[in-house]
Amino acid sequence: MKILLIKPGIADGDHIQPPLGIAYLASRLREKNEVAVLDFGMMNRRDDLFTAELEKVKPDVVGFQCYSPEIGEVKRLSVLARAILPKAVILAGGPHPTLCPEETMAKLSPETDYLLRGETEESFPLFIEKLEGRCAPENVPGLAWRENGVLHVNEMKPIEDINALPLPSWDLINPQNYPPAQHGAFFNKFPIAPIVTTRGCPFNCGFCTAPILSGKRMRKRGADSVMAEIELLYHKFGIREIHIVDDNFTLDKAHAVSILKKIIESKLPISLAFPNGVRIGTLDAELLDLMKLAGTYLISVGIESGSDKTLKRMDKQLNVAMIREKVALIKEKGIDLAAFFILGFPDETIADMRESINFSLELPLLRANFFTFLPLPMTPVTLKLIETGEIGQMDVEGLIFQKVPYAPKGVTREQLKSLQREAFLRFYLRPNIMFRNIIKVRSLTHFGYLAKRFYHWIVM
Image 1: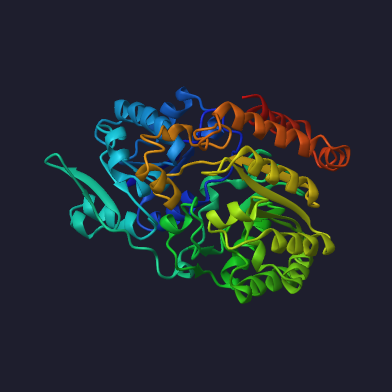
Image 2 (image 1 turned 180 degrees about the horizontal axis):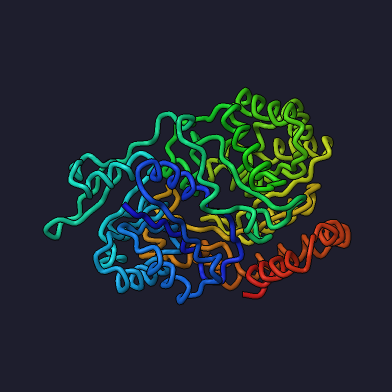
């Protein structure tokens, strides 16, 4: 079959990165099918180019990736796809269908025929067999479909051995062609590619969907597989910087050490960064020394709050004293540090938020991101807010960090947005921090993406 996998992205999005999850899925599907990938963001979001690609490929199956804020765009593009491909099977997968199958199917019907939830490298080939009449729908893990007006939703099945998965189909997404608009905003070398070495998260942070989407059991790739991918990216695609985007790269120290030692032994002149964040409590002197030797110049960490009271409510298993200790250790090792903070967590006061802002100014950070709290679907905190009646039906398309979809009791959304602006301006307008970041702007194109990001955070 001909299969077209589509990354819709978000209108006005300022993160344009290779779709790693789609590349993994494509590798498994192309073993027995003809597969193409379409990244709408790389088409400058032009509908005429989108429809022209559909007419050119003429796929039998169209699969949309769908994050929560993308659902409106998936709906719009699926309407265009259905008009051009009336006989094609259209399905959606990704985080939002995984978390909210009923809501997703209601929103995307009638154009969308199926949803495929959870990890799909094993279930999507079974779904193709189902379309060919060789597999019953009940036997496809994570499949959701309507039959006689009733929605059927199968249980998901996480992939046991991710080390057995084929390497991503980098040739279908061409990472060397992506602009300097990566996850971490800044970079040391270019071009850049993201890789993942683990899946799953055993922690219970109340605001996070990671344990729901990828399961609580952490599964790991071997160091040889990871190194083979890095060498492929370096030699075949000209990649000069690797972003490890695991949720928990350093949780299993032996795993992290084995990969870092392989990179060091390879002597490849690459840069390494962790823009998705590592768990700060897992870092120690040995790990940081190896990270530095492997080419790491930046580590991102989820600090989230400067208040022990709030950290406890978040179930972060962190405290301010530990954060200070680990941040000092990272600085001692000569690695730049970026940190994530959340403003407006439920029950926070303006004083609590100012405590976090002041804390960010005390720490030796190069960068800080101040996100407003997002009540993401199905997280423990969101479910509690719904149960208590504090929130009702959410506009999931507003669940992006530049907007303010929620403010805690006693705080208006306008006040929260004002605090977010204050946090960014107080942090970045310090002369030393401003200079250290300005000298890391690599080109006019890079500056343009940074300016767009600044506009979305500060002006909107």
